[in-house]
Length: 276
Image (cartoon, rainbow, N blue to C red; front, top):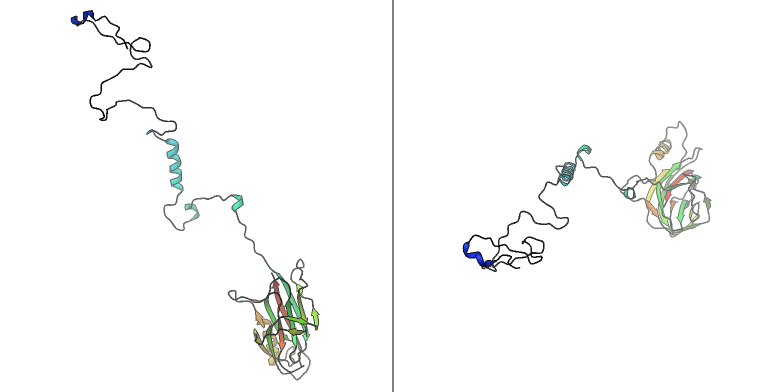
């Protein structure tokens, strides 16, 4: 910068010295003007006094954040004061998106009934058999065995056994009835009366003994009592929900075998099963 004053009268102490800026020789204070100062204590920290300083874009200030504080207050009001179960009124509402809402529906399995009517016992006879040669899974839900002999005979105590088998042939083919006409039974699941079975297990799943003597309406005898009890208490029932039902997988089956040497009597046998 230059001095814009004649120095000839400095001794008088009467005149001022005016400093002019280096950009346009005007009084210091224009944009772009600069002055140098002598710092005697460098590199010590220098005090700076400023009423305000510029902030970067988006920076926050100490001013009251009204909108933000209102949002935080609303969130705080919606959060339950304590953890654990609470009433609906004291809970925070949550809206689930439509693609995350799961609708729970109860599915009922296709159900079928295979019934042997007035089946006459025979030594080691397969009274009824059910075999599955397909990939579906068959589960037996109930078996009922009932004495229907109502004409006079000299009966015996007949021993019936439920056993596993791997196949059956011949005999009389049964047509299981469906519980829902929309369901159809695959041809790989078959039921027969008096069939020739293969792969019979040496052990029994269930065992039942029943008189083959006649019973009649109004007759006070044990056969009449057993006939009534057979309606209430099945030969087998899938009534315990924590126990798996008797399951027939591919190339498996079951038979109810007459294990007594007799041809006296008449029995109705029901096998109720589902297919998955």
